[in-house]
Length: 288
Image (cartoon, rainbow, N blue to C red):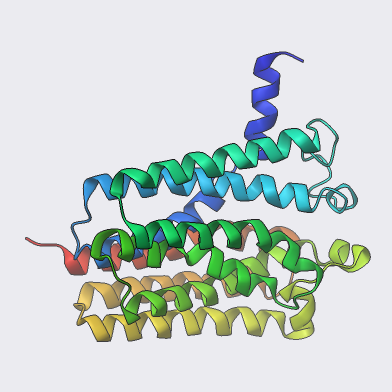
């Protein structure tokens, strides 16, 4: 196998060819960066976090595929992933994940922030353990929300050197949002997941899955509105929440029949939900 072919397999293993995961990790991180920076995040912190998002999401994908290597071969959507198909060895995957995580850690060192360094170890633990929660936790999507939202307290730590209450509220909002979008994702694989015996929110919620997704969207918006009220954000923020609510309403039209293709479309469309919230935050803090 040529080097180009090997790198192409690593790209697929890291899911760089499918950027939706990077975006779903980036949006809450950007919420935290803009709010903690009062609309003007430190440029160095911004670029460190931007690169860190890509590296940690890539590492998380590799760890996820390593954890699921014996399951993915039995799921139609994942059977051709490099590890499941035997194109990349287990040792290679572990070295790749470790290297990506190390690079993400090294990015933080120039900031010389002890709180941030401590939080980075917690973030790594969450990323490394999330894939295994599908063995025993009825709603692993909630754990994913914590992992994907951990950039929020880290952003506050990087720029303020402490973590106020609104940071944790933002992370709670992200937990509800992750439960919504990842349940849509899990609805795609429900039949295969039932066969192989792993747990997902789509299985746990059962016939109430659509209702649960919409409730999670509602809780996301309510929690974000609470943050906006605490911080006295202006009308553009609530306009952004209104746009996000419109996105969520559109998702109901996609998932209500539980068609796998349309559920997957709804999952991918969550980029617009996160972007609408960020646009509201950024516009509210814009200094003219």
